[in-house]
Structure formats: C-alpha cells, structure tokens
Length: 345
Figure 1: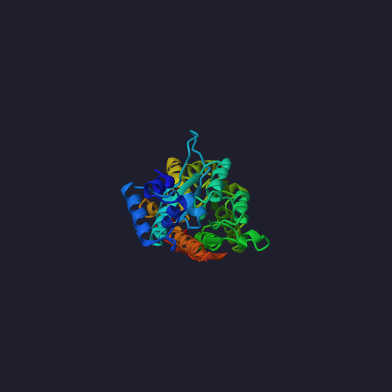
Figure 2 (figure 1 turned 90 degrees about the vertical axis):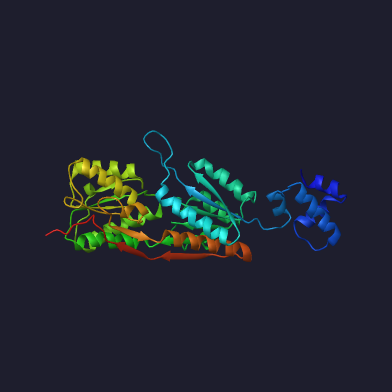
C-alpha cells in the first residue's frame, strides 16, 4: 500500500493525498475525511523521506556513538557504563520534545560513509556525536554540508569556522584532572602515575595535560616511567597497570576514567598489593558502579546526563526554529571522595 493506491481508492490525485498527509489547508473537508478514513482502514504509514521532500520536519535525531576499541579476541567493546546512561538521557529528552532517536555505533572509520548517508538522505534532522576523535574530519565535512550537529568532547577551535556552525558540550576535563592530581598531592603523594585514556580524544588530551601541569606546579618531576597508555576500557586499565608495576610501583595512580581504574585495581590485587594501603587510586566520570566496587572509588564526577540533555534540547530547538544555532557549553565537575585513597604520613 502506497500513496498511489490510496489515491486510486479515494478517486483523487496523488498530490491531493500528499496534501492531506502533510496537513495542507487547500483540501475540501469531505475529501480530507474520506482520505483520512482510507488511510486509517489500510494502516498506511507515509514514508519519512517523502514527507521530508514535501517540506515536513522529520522528527528524528541521530545519536552516533564512536566506539573503535576491540578486546583481545577482536570483538567490539562498548563501554556501556558510560554510553548507556547518556543514550537513555538523549532518548528521554528527545521524546519529551516529540522526537525519536536513531542510535548508531561507528566502529570503523569507513562507517562514517553510512553516517553521511543518514544525514544527506534526511533520515535524521540533526545528530549528536559522542566518543569521536578531537577534530574528526568526517564530522567536519557533515557540519560544513549544512547539517545540524551537536558534539560531545570536542575542543572549541576559534580559528576553524566549522566550530561556529555546531553545538559543543564538554565537561571541564582539565580542571577535573588537575583537581584529582592535586588531591593526591595534598594527601602527601609525590610518586603519582597516570593511565592515559585515548590520546586522540579531547578528554584524554586534557586530563593528561592537567596531570602533568599539576605535578609541575607542585614542584614534582613528571616521570615517563609513571605514564602508561590505556584506552578507556577495563582491560586497557588492567594491562596498563600490569605494565606500570613492572617498571615502578607508585604510591598513587590517577586513571583517565573509572573503567580503567577498575582494571587497575584488579591488576594491583593480582600483584599482591592493596588499594589504598599500598596504592591510592582516583578515577574520572563517576560511573554508577564506582560507588559499589571495593574499595569504593574516589573519582571526578562529570554531569553526563545534564550534558546529554543540553545537547539534545539545544539541537532540537535549533531544528524547530530553523536557525543556524551554535553554542559552546562547559559543565563544571566535582571531586567525589570515597575509600580508594590514603594519606601518607
């Protein structure tokens, strides 16, 4: 069943059916009711792309989760404890505004081709990206084509015009990481290691830079032996910590996120060391499980659900108002003290 079939049954032209579907006024009431009744009886659902071509807003936004990490077996890794609540908040806020959400995972660079098709075919009226590389060229191409985009974890680059054509929402990664490192320094630690997140993500870059600067400002040397690369996953934190402990045993570790902190605790326990008695641990994000592990994790809380709400509401407002709206938000953070850190005498 399509609009041509509806037109034949009603004895009208296809354009008349299209005008009824798209709520145009220039259709007699009797004809309108007849067509609406036929549509109802035949369970006809207008094709979204046809409605878009007719000028009707597509009340769908895309949520594109960039996850290009794989576990040792080559299987895709999804950091559900981070992305799941964010996704839920996007869906909830979009639904409240009368929009649906198309969720898509980008696991390979070539997947951006499909993302572009989703935008260019007007399957969505706008999209939110999370987990992308800082300055991702594929996303800049989408923005420059005129599509409405909201970005999480993206540096605001004043010298690139493209970032004046989108919405950017960040947590204060730098201040949060500086505060976390400084907290350990305040507890008397000077041998503080750092497990770096993904070095191509803004959050990984800023947290690493803040760690180094906090040490330098306190007069503590930054030692390469105490810096190990992770990948924001539990397994990445576990492997990085095992590698770290083979080189040097610090008194504290600042992990680039909570997932890596959980992996770090496991590696420390397997080395017959204890948290926090032997090594203090601080994470970042304050995922839900952070308060339930043993010991409960001291971490930096970022307002992930609020970030999702801002990105969603601002994007949909831009769509509804048909404005070339751009905005930059940086949300404050909090240090949450629990039981994974110990003061040195």
